[in-house]
Each structure stands twice: as C-alpha cells, then as structure tokens.
Amino acid sequence: MASRGRIVIVAAFIALGLGFFGYYYYANLDIPELEKVQLELVDVKVLEVNSIDNRANLEVSFLVTNSGKRTVTISNINYELFANGKNIGNGQYSTEDIALPGRALIYPSQPILLTNTFDFVYTDRVANEYLSITKGEQVSYTTTGTLTVESAWTLLDKNFESSFG
Image (cartoon, rainbow, N blue to C red):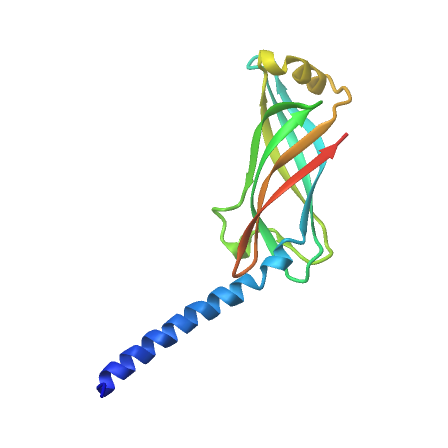
C-alpha cells in the first residue's frame, strides 16, 4: 500500500498536468476567431524623395478587418511590396515591443487603418519602378506576407496577399 505522502504528490502532479492541458485547450479556442481577421492593402503614398541618396519614403496603409467576435490586436506584419509586378523590397510593421494593452485594438466589425513607412532604395533592378513611383505615375501595388494576430491568450501567424492600384 502506498503512503499518504506519495498519493498526495502523485495527485498534485496529475492536477498540474490537467491544469496545463486545460490552459492549452482554452487558449486554442481563440484560433478560429483569430483566423477571421483580414488584411488589405489600401494605399501607398510617397512621403519624401531624397534624390541625393536615391531613396524614397513611402507610406503603406493596411486596412485590418475583424469579422470575428473577439477583440484582437496585430503585433507584427512582415511583407514584401511589389510595384507593377516587381519586388521592390521588404517592410515590417511591428508593435512587439509595446505591451498588449498599449497596442491598437481591432474590435469586431470595426476596421482599423495601420500605416507603415517603407524605405524604398533606388537600384538598377528597380529603376523603372522607382521613377514611376517618384514621378507620381499610376503604379499597381501588390503585397504578400505574414501578420501576427493576438488575443489575450493566443497568437496566430497568418499569410496574406493583397493588391492596390
């Protein structure tokens, strides 16, 4: 027959294991809600052109729509930006260094606009696109990447692709 101390220790470990399982199960209940978040590229504007360094700062605007029932936040958007079908570089919107309560909240059925400054550097490979963008000509933009959607208990990395123009 097992001693009372041994039974208490085994029961404590079983309770701890059930607690971890319960937390894991509860945290994963949010995943279907997080998958309902959509990201759309809505605008790309020239903020500044530095003709000496051959750089242009672009403002990339994303519209985030939450069709789920839970309030969420976006901690990270990693994206590639294409102009007229040609890759012009990578960008990142990040609020990872801001605590969850300080981030922009995305309420259900209330779209929010998130903007990011994209540093576009002139190279021979993207010379035509650079000139089209800096001269204000009509340009078709596409972006692909990954966004990180977070709730209080869970985070989800989700792929996206969107076009504008």
